[in-house]
Length: 289
Image 1 (tube, rainbow, N blue to C red):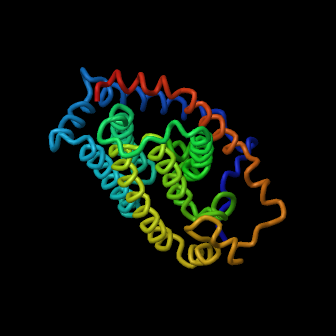
Image 2 (cartoon, one colour):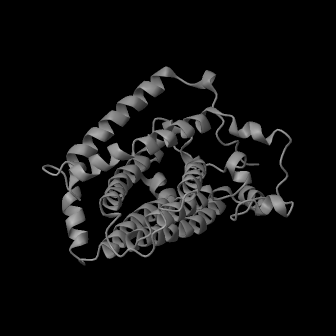
């Protein structure tokens, strides 16, 4: 009924499409830097200063940034059907990404720059085994976080964007992997940092993804009708619940659904992001947010 997630056929790829994707990505990053990130030309710092002026509390600013992103991101997702009918799939994707990306970057940068502000609620970093446990938790979370971005050509609107009804791979474990991945990421980072800013960010992010799970089911039901109801009946939001109660029947070669190029890419990017933490922090500090 649903689609096979993370299915990447190299033979069906067009070199011209990936060249176009590279050009689009470069142009988007250039515009993002000039119009938003650069303190001398962009509006990012003005935006952060405006939000921060509401309260001197970094916890309030962190929560407001997350809330603003959530309203814009989920609001545009809700308007996707009428928006695509009005301006087309590709144009709406450009509008969606062009609005959401700057807000997401601002929220992430603020978190990096203020993650050790606020009130220290607990201090567990001296626990010998904790770092390894949280590292593994965070690593696994990224396999849940990004199932909707397997087709990067759709993300960049090189291919016409679609609202997919995935059913294999990570979807057998949970119908809303981004929610599960975000909870895992938030729990790991909050336990490690242990202060009020981390708690504020986690409350906002998890709340946003809980709403997104409900809204996603609603939108898929409208778009796919009975097909979604069938997929819904044999999947679960809570991880492994449908497998345990027998609604999800795993094929014998289930593991093969994870031995695919997109998961290899996620593994590489996740490891790269971990080792690039110092670079990410230095880049964030440069923005003075």
